[in-house]
Image 1 (tube, one colour):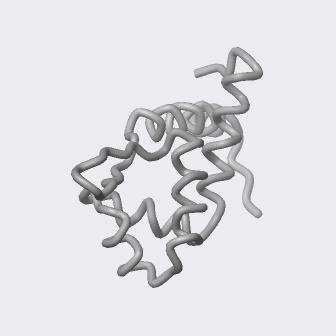
Image 2 (cartoon, rainbow, N blue to C red):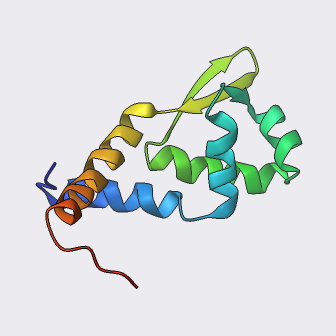
Length: 105
């Protein structure tokens, strides 16, 4: 997969940036197996509502999360299609590395 436009690059950067924070990674890990409401995420992460809200907003803006309103609760799940985009982007480097010399650090 080739990044074709500045917009594509900005989307990729936004996603990688969102995944660079330990709390946001923990959110992603919790959502790997099931969707959870904000209250469940808050309980498991033991963070304030405002802090969680901030991090969920970043993950949503990066297109890594989907949200669904059910009554007065918001349930979050992973947007797997965006993770596929990231995987394809990184696969180019894996393919490139397998066709060149391996370097040891």
